[in-house]
Image (cartoon, rainbow, N blue to C red; front, side, top):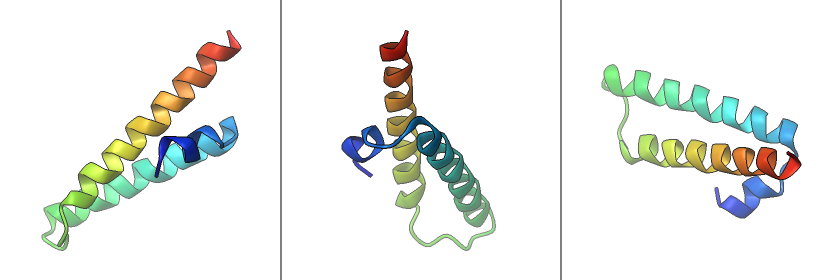
Length: 65
């Protein structure tokens, strides 16, 4: 996802999306450990999405303070 997509979300939606991405990352790591993951680039892509979402969340909190 792009930063603009995360920035357009409400804080509750953003928190839910971060939780969803973290569970997806867990599932990808599990599949990697069991040898079922074919495209290992998915892991780094999800990690980047988590970082982008958390950055937008932090910026939104700083704007409120």
